[in-house]
Length: 260
Ligand SMILES: [Zn+2]
Image (cartoon, rainbow, N blue to C red; front, side, top):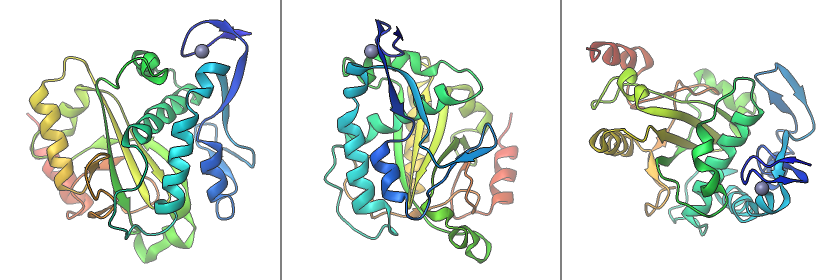
């Protein structure tokens, strides 16, 4: 027994995969190991957390199935299909937000941004101040070393920092974000932005419009899998979100120049 992280009832706790089990199975043949970055270890078992009761855990099943369906049909290969996948955008969004919350709870540095989304995870509220965008991933690394190392088929996540936008410097945007994470699944990247409740609506809207322009699309946009390929820092890791047409030094210089 223990206190469930979502409903806060004292109940028998169950194991929840940090990433969905069905999703990990799709990538097993190419990426069978889990690298636990915060702890500097790797292992063959799935990463799990054990802080959800049965009913709360079970309620997440449809979004786990949804992401596995989406990955099977669209994210295991370079994204060239032009149709919106037959998976409810709301399920994909729920998967991104709850996976990011799982990662936070399994990490080493405590953060409680996800407390505001407990009711959302239980289907009792909407996602409030969360935006989730998607972009294709392509290997722009030198001599395509990322593909060479099979990084292309990895599933992993990193904190996202937004640089080089016209509507504000990274520092200004960061001040209005509670949490920002990019989750790469094979040939796609999901970007989660969790805003402070007091974020100016115009700033939030401008950031989204500008990211749309650079190829990051909303999950409900038609043909979102067919748009511009996007890559950040041109390697396996990504913690920088900016215009893919510019080189990294150019983006950083432009951001620096925008500082007050
Ligand atoms: Zn519960």
